Image 1: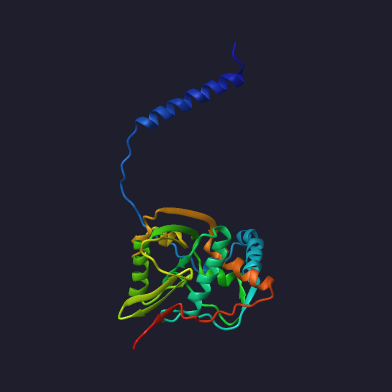
Image 2: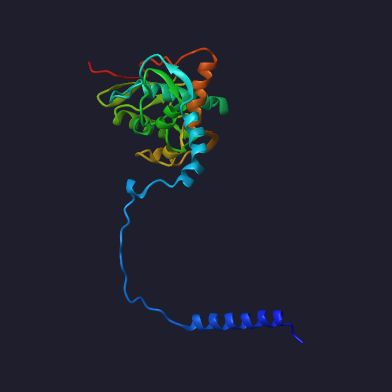
Length: 254
C-alpha cells in the first residue's frame, strides 16, 4: 500500500507531466507589444548595497592607478613630426623590454595613432601607462624578408614617420635612403626580426606586409606591462625618463 506522502508525490508528478504535455501542444501568437523607456538619472537614487559591494575594489584600484612609477624630465609630446618624444620613448621602451625576451630583435614598429596620450613633465603613474596603451595588446616578434621590411620603410615614409627603434633613415622627395637597421646598412636580401604588437602584426593600418611573416612569436608580454616595467626599472636604477630626439628619422629638404 502506498503511503500518503508517496501518493502525493506521484500525483504531483502526474499533474505536472499532464500540464507540461498540454503546454507543449499549445501554440501562442503575439497579440500586441508595448514599448516604454526608463531613463536612468540622478532621480533614481543610489543603491547603497551595490556601492558598498564595489567600494573596496574601487579604493584598491584607485590606489594602484595613482601609484607613481617614475618621473619625466620633460613633457613627452607627439606632434605631427616624423620623430616625436613620445614615439621615441615608447619605441625604446618596448625594444628594451622585448630584448629581454628575445635578443634577436633588431627593430621595432608602432604607429602614432596607437599611442593614445602624452606624458606630462613630472611624476608618471600606472594610470598614465594605461592611458597611453588602454588595449590588451601583446608584443610579437616577426621574422620578415628584406622585401617586406622595404614595405615597412615605405609605409614609414608615406605616413610621415612612425614610432620606431633600432632603425634610422633619411627621407628626401618621399624616398628613404641611408637606412640602417641594428647599426648596419639595410640589405633587402637579408631577413630581419621586427618587434611590434598583435594588432599591427595582423595587418592593420595598411601593414599587410606584416601579416605573412616567415615566423611569428608572441613573447608573453603585454605592451602596457612593458611600458610599466621599463619605467620602473629606470626608477630602481635612480634614473628618470630623459628622452631626447636623436634623428632616427630625418627629413632632408635641401
